[in-house]
Image 1: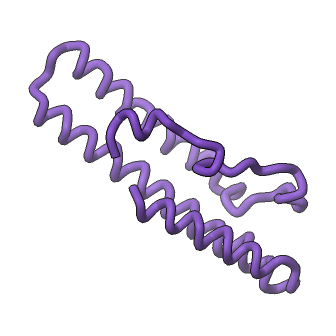
Image 2 (image 1 turned 90 degrees about the horizontal axis):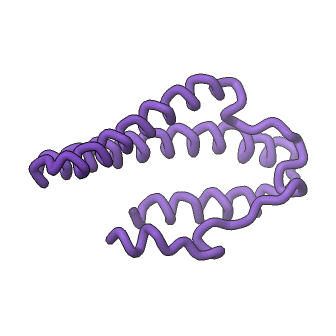
Length: 117
């Protein structure tokens, strides 16, 4: 994906989530929220490091190496979040029989988006 593609976020790419979508108010990641925030802050630091590297005219291959590390960190975070979603939200829908098809479709679309990156 090029920089211009990443900058062009369309409403279809990021679906709106309303209160009715998560009526329980507790998400699959709630037990590990602090760990997730800590991890995201580390990733944010990596991105700031990339900005600093560009600002300091660091060799392009060194920057690309850091871009790869940042990308892998985000992908790893996304996989963990997806696993928690499947274990909590999708499993809850399966157990209650409420909205299982919608939850599976939602998860499938999320996986498809992850595979495109």
